Length: 504
Ligand SMILES: NC(=O)c1ccc[n+]([C@@H]2O[C@H](COP(=O)([O-])OP(=O)(O)OC[C@H]3O[C@@H](n4cnc5c(N)ncnc54)[C@H](O)[C@@H]3O)[C@@H](O)[C@H]2O)c1
Image (cartoon, rainbow, N blue to C red; front, side):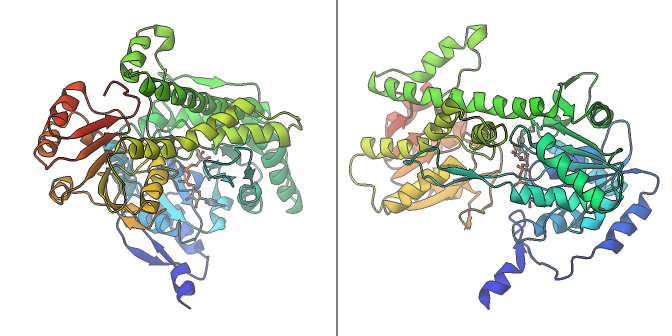
């Protein structure tokens, strides 16, 4: 009984408001009323109102050279239904430090050209459908097990494409932005759509299917990372590629950020996962060098910054608590899976898989380092974690490495308090997170840990002064945000340790 009630409720992590999920999934009137207000405009439906889709919808609603009517569509599930209601009620479903998000949202509210729904009827009205849903990798392994132990289930993605094919017009452009295993648009999306159209007695000649991946960065430049940034695209045929190009030109500042057209969608899909695998590998590569620096009494930050003076080595990574977020933790695996399963190769992408495996272990290492450096058992210790999200200055907690670290502290029996200026509610853990650091610091801690590099914790003189005045504690910086001056100041009273700094 209780489960039924909980299943029927969708709670907004932004406002805490709870919504009852309707039993009927008919929103035809809502969609028709919205389109009547926007008559004459081309209709763009964005499938998936997550971190990418909800903001892509905003960008399209504020397109540069065309007035679109934008309908965002998501699932009526406890995880997502609140996003639909929130967009229609005047609260944007993403907390972001980029002021443009609120500006663009207010502009869409004034123009009344952004509506959200759960009804697949919306697809039947679309001229363009942008696919921004998730395509997950299920990792069966924990950080200590075999990295090959993962699984890619394409079924939810296929069902989403079927929902489009069962409703769309025959001359629609379907633009896949989801990060997919290379081969997906050509071998999976297009055949599903064609089959659905044929079953409905419609022609497949006018169908256009393309792929253009997002490089969106949910942070202070959220909107610009979509609208004012370089894009790569391709079509499943020339007609599709032309249609994608025409659409992207209306929403992206392509005069300043020219589009790159690749030969086919296998290439764009590969470009996305290679781009992210490169980054994941770069981080994984630094992990063992950080350990080496700790053993050799070397400051790895000093070393890396010296190397970064070489123009060819500017993007060498720094150590940290771990790799989180939705993309770098899975994209190398998607690529490897595609190589074996969509192109029938007997070979996986071994190095890329290993990179993910190494990165997954980083929070465990950070915990073990704390254990080894702290004088005494951790059980019962009061610990304050500064930062919950996976990346500085964003509110995204998906696959945050803080989780692995937090879990270890919990197993150890620590009394943990969380602070994050961008996260009010840690959805995956079902925990509310404090925003008031000043008040928290008065509570007295044995250990304070910087777990995310938010700017609130960087070069923050008043924070450092406040901590200096607290009774002696253990201050652990897992990200490397402390400057040498801050370390010196804190060290007069406290024990200070930083990952990768064997010199301390
Ligand atoms: N978050 C990033 O920074 C980022 C950056 C670049 C690319 N990407 C890629 O973009 C894609 C989307 O990522 P995200 O971060 O927005 O994910 P997300 O989980 O925040 O959002 C996905 C949304 O799609 C919805 N959805 C799933 N199936 C659906 C269906 N059948 N119909 C309608 N809605 C459906 C989900 O309910 C969810 O709201 C992924 O492939 C991701 O790898 C993400």
